[in-house]
Length: 306
Length: 306
Image (tube, rainbow over all chains, first blue to last red; front, side, top):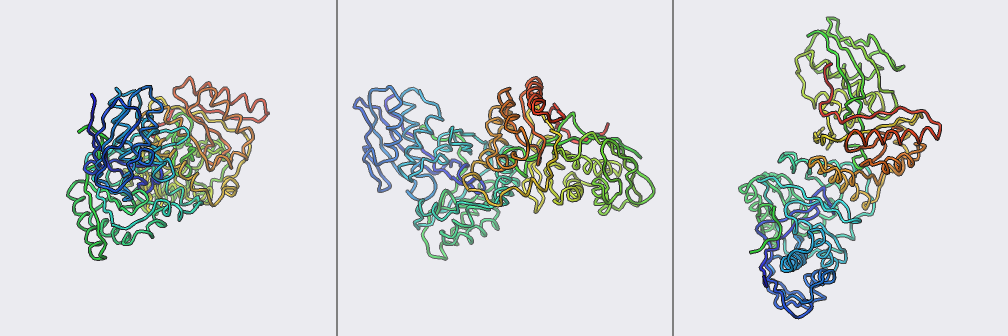
């Protein structure tokens, strides 16, 4: 195999009580990439459509992630990468992670899969480091593993796949405003109360249990963030209203996707997820802010060949 | 049925990363109680052996928990309670919870089970309030439900049962020193860093996932407490040594049981658990502190009739 075409899913990270540890991959939102094995050493981004992003290898997250893989490989040749972005950069649903993971997953496949998924996570994290200054794993892990993933630890890196119940759907609305990841991180407090911490890990335990037992009510009861959402939601106009109408419409839970500005909701079944989308749209239509909306089943497979 | 004899298991709470939320019931350590349905209203503690504890109904945790149940019941009669303590008060393995839950579980059985387990937890929590000033649920919940239980939330009370892998064994050593729950709580800091919080909920998520998937290695990797153990362990002489020899002997993880002074370790299989017990004993023998040691499978059933 010389060439492979892949679907690179969008991902939701910082899922409510799972701040910095829990992410999930989406089924129907993602980029497409075509990766070709070539004799010439190194990595070249030959085409990039859909977004205005750098194509110099060292400035492109797919390029940097790919170089991290090449540095650990004994392969003597190189790769050419075409990226067709469908995920908007800065939307908070793992745009950079989709490109980084797509590159390394495809390259690994073309090389006969010498690397484990965990190794691929590490390579893709270098793309995240370029994008945000922090080599976080909470978007790249679900993109590679599919379903929900828990980043239990960074040192050593420990990724725990968590199953997703069959009827779990996500609705994501992306209001077209800019929230920089760095700003969004700056306003977080360095300290939290122990009491809030206890609530947070109680909820995360409940959420993980609910995902294993397919208990949608428990998932809903656990999708609470006492720590980050109250602070970060201030940066997202309309957040409180979007959340309240989502919950009234039947969402299991609702929160900030990644560091925003996208807002996600989980629902049981497609119909509920579509109703939530309608309710979310109305909020931003009234406020007069443009938006994109995605309704998607959870993607249990991760990146795939298309 | 007029009379019932029950086994009331000891429990480990504050399981490492599960501070204040995660507890587990033990199979081979626990009290025995005999509860009799009588015509005379109210509750009387007719016998109490094994420990020097008050037998006045209002001063005894079983009495107080039982009164909480009676207050919600339309039963016109009363109960007489015999308590045979095998669990030492103040040991940190749920002595008060065993008595409180034993009383309400048995009374409920004698009344034809009008109350749910969740309601019984609430009644038993009144016994905990008497014992420690705080109506906590992290010992009474596993005593009633069996296995591991997560107290996801107190308002409203939400108890999530978590399965236990078949080969999970606990070793508990109780050094005969006094650590008051109130002192142990006082030295905790009100604030923690967000960074430590993230590690803690990452580990709790990993632990819950490991319990569901019977992944003993993951359970072991997740049994880490970045927040409470570093502070509370100062109150327990020999803690660091007990922990290090337990881990060297093959324990999956080791931490403070409840608010101490007991120290627990989890192991895969009985043999490992017994080896850990031997290693723990040596530490306190050398230091010259008396101890009790318990080796027990996880009790997946909770309180039972005997």
